[in-house]
Structure formats: C-alpha cells, structure tokens
Length: 109
Image (cartoon, rainbow, N blue to C red; front, side, top):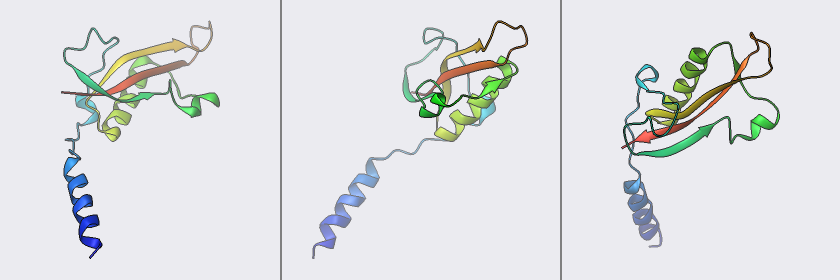
C-alpha cells in the first residue's frame, strides 16, 4: 500500500498552507515608504520593478491615483492587504508625460 504514505504526506502538506482572507482592493492601504507602514509585513510581490515584462515595457498611468487603484487590484488578486514603497516617476520631462509606478505588495500581520 504505497498510496497511503503519499496520501498522508499530501494531507500533511495541505495542512501547512494557511489561506489568507481576501482584502477588497478599496480597503488596501498604500504607503510611500516602509517607515510609513504601521505594522510588520511579509512581502508578497514587488510589482513592476522585478517583473521580466519590464524589459519590454511597463504599465503607464495618467495619475498616481490611477496607478494606486491598479496596484490595489493586483494586491487583492495576489492575496496582499497592503502596498509599501509606492512611487511614480514621469517617463520624460514633459509635464503631461505618463507615469511609471511601482510598489511592493505585502501581507500585514
């Protein structure tokens, strides 16, 4: 009966995974720095800065508010409940140039 040990191992590993409560995007706080964050957090994913897709291009936004809303949607989809190190940068010197923004999705404890 080799299936019993494999089943027992799979059941044990499944018990190790702790599901996270999904946070609605509109309830996810955004902080410009780690020091502005009030709690200890675990990094879920750095959005745009460490993605291979940025070698080709990154999303651009018309405003920081639009970017924050988009990153909140990504954070919610990834199981995060906060964004730290959020920042936006103009793609050129023109006043109406699009913004490139990034941030780190975290799970506050």
